[in-house]
Length: 37
Image (cartoon, rainbow, N blue to C red; front, side, top):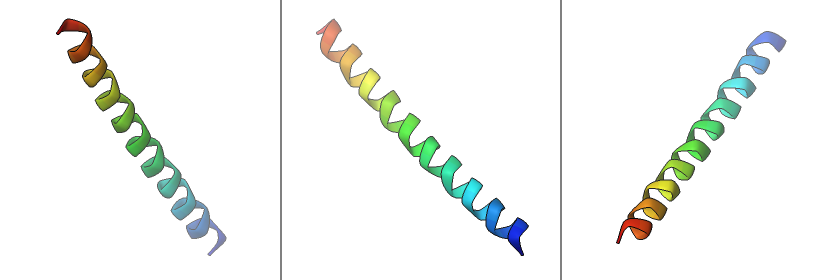
């Protein structure tokens, strides 16, 4: 049972990380666009 809890927490963390990196990528893309224009 404790293992499952650990796994759920880990997957939740990784999901948060993925979302964060996605936001960062979007920010970078936007910044690049503004820099070129």
